[in-house]
Length: 102
Image (cartoon, rainbow, N blue to C red):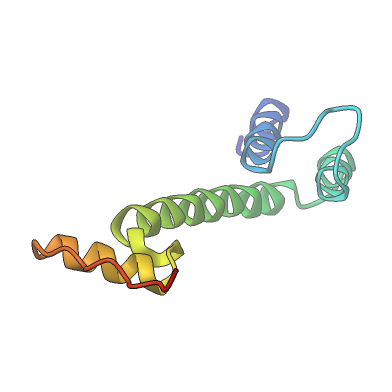
């Protein structure tokens, strides 16, 4: 039952949803490869379906990991100066303005 055509179609669509969006007129090589894999009849469809489900779980977990990393480490994408200012503000301080000769 795990390798029924409707289940495989739903699995195929789920995999495509996890990939970066591209127009249907120009599919990526990865999308083409996934389509040929799903369209060719193989003897071991159940194993391919299981691997597809594992891939979907992995990609969703990676997306969630990136979201959580950005949320709980907001200074990761900042340069050193911005990170120091943010740290000073966190403890209730303001950094003095830098002196620049005119």
